[in-house]
Image (cartoon, rainbow, N blue to C red; front, side, top):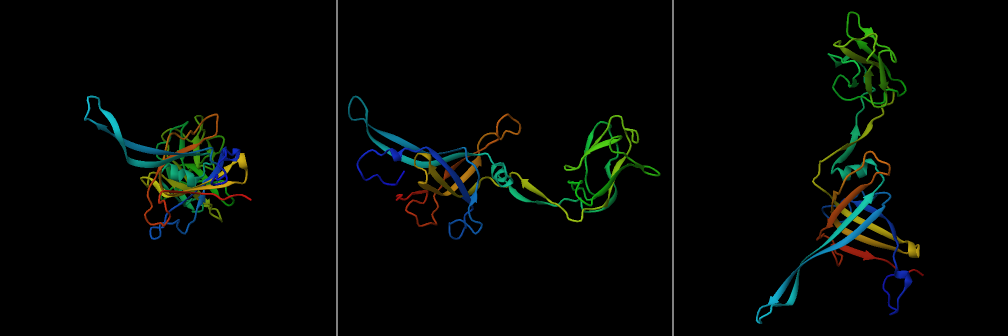
Length: 284
């Protein structure tokens, strides 16, 4: 798609078989441009569409016996976008769930003694492991971590993995076996970290529903498969995005996140259109 067609003739290069990528960046409140964090590539985009929504009002002439439309007024115009992403990283998840990202302080490097897991254990149930301050603990298989599980008593009774419990060390979840030998229903289950990891490994975390919507500059760079190498840039100067549809957690196909949004006016910029600017260049 080489820009303006000035030949006056049809051109098969103007056919578009669209591929492309989406870049997204937050807006600097002072300049209206993308802020210092720059544009983030949202990853593979299986689908992207844009649409124009127009509201019109017809005026009818009522001077004759049959009314007829003698004018049509356009009362509003709106540009909408929708797209799908199939790279389920935490930044994209944060946008989908209108949240924020941060680092979770994993407590597997903090030693503690006889922290109660439950004061009334139920055989055949699973329990989350937490530090003395109540925070969840993960990655107990990390180098340097030494921990024990015990039944409270005088003295405490050390539990045996495979006999009394199984554990998912990565997620910090212990399952008390229905046929456990060294602990019975109703006993107090506790645990200790006697040696913590020398190098703590923290976790990525998304906090959902902390924003009503995601707003920023969206740049779609279209690469036309009908004319490889010819790129067209669609710059939506201020788009308000929200999640649109379901995110499949289990299925036989790749999970995708769907978004939809409205392109709003960005009154701070100097482009001729403060909603959408489309640019390309003539390939030599």
